Image 1 (tube, rainbow, N blue to C red):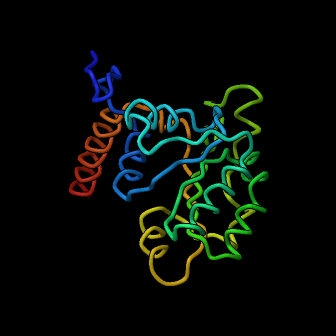
Image 2: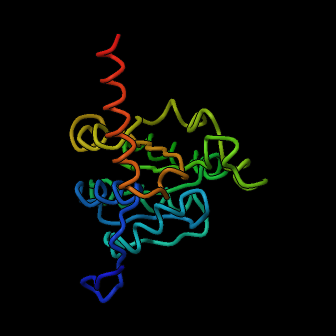
Length: 197
């Protein structure tokens, strides 16, 4: 079942877990999202276009370093944070110099990374294996802060520094209502086990 969106986009009535990230992006008022499209964050890309109705606008880039540099330039010129989305492993290995320059300038660049499925049996042959890592963001860990909401508030006041939010791609493509049922059910089972003990 679908409904008509404000721009004539046919929107699904289903919600996806990646829609939650889009809600955060809108809540914090990020003006643009620069990215190099790819499979490791396809759920988030789909949510930005369809659920988010391309608001904030997506700036398509042909390289992850360019996406980070566009966000860096915007942040430096305006003093406001901007998002760059990169692939895990491959993208985070292409982007470090851009992130490092943002770090040197104390620019509020928000890097969102996505990895292939962390559960090995869920990985597609080859492509998910080269876009997955157990320790995401290790190449830039020492020059970024981790997380979105805490980093966003700190990014607007005090010492500015690039931030990293990394997420597992597979759950981001899962139905949000399934997650809610699983969480609610798991919580009840946990409470029952605790009461029985």
